[in-house]
Amino acid sequence: MPAPLRRLLATALAAAAPAAWSATFDVGPYLALTPGNWGVLQDTASGQLSGYVVSVNAAGQLAQTWYRYNGSSWVFDSAELFAITARRISYLGFDDGSATWLFEPGFSFARKVAVGDAVVYKGGIRNQSTGELVATTGAISFTAEALSASVPAGSFSNCIKVRNYSYQAGQSRDSVSISCPSRNEVRTWYTKIRDTADPQVEDSSERHSLVMIQGGDSNPPFP
Image (cartoon, rainbow, N blue to C red):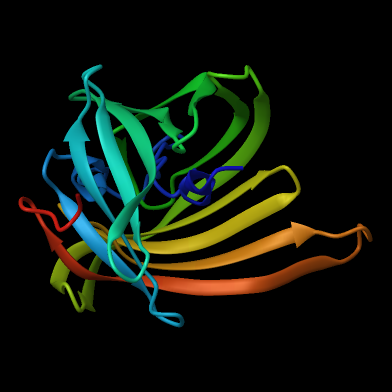
């Protein structure tokens, strides 16, 4: 499936009933879905660069467009689509460059969350060109708040830690991210696991992490 599935639930910040022992907070600023917001991330092992910029598309949706660096220039990778109100955020779907995929049922979640909140998503994504529907399951939890983070892009405070798990088509993605206000994910650790022919064996050969090396609110380096 398209690359955006690796971020399927990393940005899908929904919650169950607020934990009694933790005050709620607005998760909106941590997603940084503000037109003009951008970031460049680097794979800490390979050095590969990727990045994103937020804009408003012709349909009035918030588009977080992702790029990858091919060694000489930035090229389009994918675009994730969102809608946001004062109380809720909707993750609408994404464009992988060949088709638009939309969630069924719709993926909407409250902006107010708390440490200890968790959600399980079970639904699918449909290819709007072919009609193909791919089942998707995922879970996410908030594990910490009021964190500090120092990365090449800068030093940040009041950050949160988010853990997520997603599964579809024989492949799972487990990740832990540090998200900071107005900057989105400044550091993320990924593990990808694939099913094998033997149901008692899994292939967990891919592990990598990303760190933000640049970020801003205007003049992104992408085309």
